[in-house]
Image 1 (cartoon, helix red, strand yellow):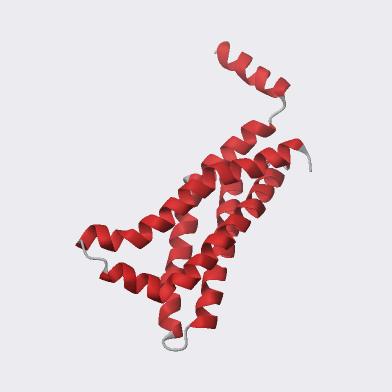
Image 2: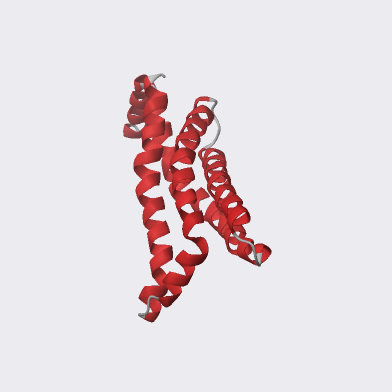
Length: 161
């Protein structure tokens, strides 16, 4: 594997993993923080505990795939916003599809109702990450993949303005 591709995947992990894992933990803990009681947190873990484990595992795999995709898009000259959108969409499709699949396999009653929160989360997360974390990751990958001569030209041009 080439050096710049490895750096792109590493960037995806270094930026995406801490923020994603913290978001998952925060989502589980928000009811406890808001109410001061852990009952709702227990209900969330009871209903979605196994699915959440699957989401975390899928997330780590999705960051690898997203990093490769973002690298390829940057190499092909795609815009940062398009790269970010594709990155965010792929990562979120992988994690929320895994989550829904586990819900479908483990829940026996009210399966449809149990699918509504992850579907909403998919849409919201895709939109939010496209304009935040995904954009940051795309920007860093673009900077990593710029040729040093192009970087020097950019610096020189900015210095003469």
